[in-house]
Structures are given as structure tokens and as C-alpha cells.
Image (cartoon, rainbow, N blue to C red; front, side, top):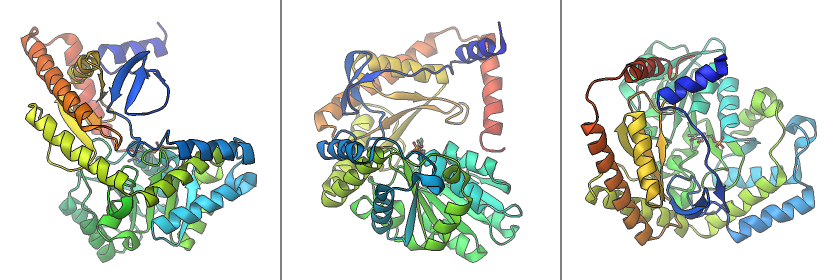
Length: 415
Ligand SMILES: Cc1ncc(COP(=O)(O)O)c(C=O)c1O
């Protein structure tokens, strides 16, 4: 057995092996999964815009007008008119002076954080920040201070000892736990300590705030942070990403952010699709209200069906199961009844914190959600009973799994 085979074998043993599933057709509320119709409850296409006729048409027209690729990095020959148009519209939407596009949200976070964090400074990062932020911290030449999730006291304690010019970075709406960062507390601490703030609004734009402008807009803080990153790949239904900031910071990113400088610019059809989605969002804010109503309904239905739903209000609902294999078993049991909800395991979540991540779309109907809540709650109950009645003696496989999981927790964020 070679080292790759051994690594794959170990992942299988630990219940952490992953493979992709084939969805035929667009990302609607109902999809064909491996040829079978199922209700999709794990997509980030929150507003259902990925296959909206206007979005499709805009992408198709852009392909005919500008072709499918940008041909080069933005700084070589990759900046095209559609890049400029979308950047202007996004800056306006976020009430910021300027905006620059990146190839994806992953690339935006890695590029922005590594550019802003100077060698002799410190990046303060929430323990549950997205992997792209973790990797941005790793690429930065600054030290990283990981503060406990949403813990302002821990952040304040770290900042007391920090040199000026540090960077605080946080998701606004956390991708796996569906909770919200204490943004006003973070901004106040940053202002007191002269730190810059980067907020990743990947899951909040299109999902909350006035007209879907995000969590910062909801809190009236858009102009009190230094950089807002966001993706075009979730509520805006496309692919690509952006950073909104002052003109000075955007000029700095264009000159310094390695993921922008050394990567091909995002393709015209994806950008034109995102622009059409943004226009739809501005014209029809009721989509955001429908998403929020669906989130409230699903939280209530899951609770009354007997699932443990953490307090919250967003469209991301984490149902923590704990054990990785048990979480996969619940997902499989729900799928057998036509409900596709994904099991999220380490290293995406900390060890022992495997969960079902239920995500809503504005295009789900109330009856779909009521039925799905019953299916998911029943799948959790059955799986828990099955695991409880299994041999209580801990197998060597499980023991190895525990020790491996403990290791994962220790290294989750630190470089
Ligand atoms: C909080 C957060 N930021 C950034 C990203 C990356 O965005 P993209 O999918 O555009 O690379 C994700 C993706 O899941 C995310 O959840």
C-alpha cells in the first residue's frame, strides 16, 4: 500500500472519507441527486438566483459578447468592462468608495488578509472563521492570535498587548454554526486599539440587513470597518468574489494581494450573471424576506419535530450530532426519504462537533420544509437509538479516531 492509499484508508476508518455527489440540472430547491429527485437543503444558493432566467440570460449574453475567459490576471490583460461595471455596482451596494473582484471568496480572503497583515503585526482571528481566513493567516507573515469564538473579552485581552497596526478578521455570519459575530464590539475594540477590521460577509450578503446588504449594514457599521469581503457564489448565485474598501486600500490590494496578482481574472459570464442577480436583489428585496421567513419556519418546525435547534435566526441551522459516523448515518437516513442535508465533519468543524448543516433557500415552500423537518428529526432519533444500542465497548478504530480528532482540534487554526 502506498502512502496515498494508506491516507485514504485511514480517512475511511475514521469516518472522515469524502466524495462528491452528482446533481443533474440546476441548483433549485428540488434536484436530481444521483438520478433521484430530492429536496436540497444544503446549498448556499440562498435566494434561488443561480438558475433565474435573467441571470442565465445575462451569463449567456456575456459569453457571446466577451467570450468565456478573461485570458490573464487583472494586472496583465484581464481587466474587462464587465469587471469595472460590477465593481462599481458592488461598491455602491455596499456603500463603499471602491471595490475589487477576486476569483473566489477563498482567494479574496487569502489575498486580503495576507496583504494587510504586516510582518511585525498580529492578525486576530475568530476560532470559527472560515478556512479561507485561516489560510490567509497562514500565508501572512504576521503572527496569528486566535480568539475564542465571538469572545470579546478574549479579543480585548489580546489587543491590550498588541502593537498598533494589527488586523482583526471575522466572518459576520458563521458558515457552519449560523450565528453572528459581535460586530459592534469588534469595531469598538478596533477603534480603541488602532486595529484594522476585515469582515467576511459571504453568508450575510443577500440574506440579512436592509435590502440584503449584510450584517454590517444591519448594524449600521459598513463605514466603520476597513475591508468587507463577499462572494458571488452564494446568494448571488454565480462564482467569483469581491473586496469593498476605500480607494486607497483597493489600490493597495491591486498592488499587493497575491491571489489577485497571480491568478486569472474571473470570467465574464460568471460576472454578468452575478450582476443580474445583484440587480434582482435590489429590485426585489422580498426574496430576502422570504429567505428569513423560511429560516424562521424551519427552525420552528425542526424544534416541534423534536430536533435540538440552537438559538438563532439565520438561514444556516446547525444540528449538532457530535460523532462523525453518526452524523453521516443521519444524513443517509434523511436522504432515503428524499431530503438531502449534508453531514459536516472535521476538519470543517472541530473534533466531536460533527453536525448536519441545514440551509434554506427563498424558493423552498412551507410544505417542503414541514415535511423535511419531520424527516430530519426522525432520522436523528433513529440513528441515536441505533448508535446507543451498538456494542458499548470502544473499538480500536474509535480509539484511533478520538486521538486523531483531538489532534485536529489542536491544529484547527494555528499555522
Ligand atoms: C465564510 C466563507 N468565506 C469564504 C468562502 C469562500 O467563498 P467561495 O466559495 O467564493 O470561494 C466561504 C465558502 O464556503 C465561506 O463560507
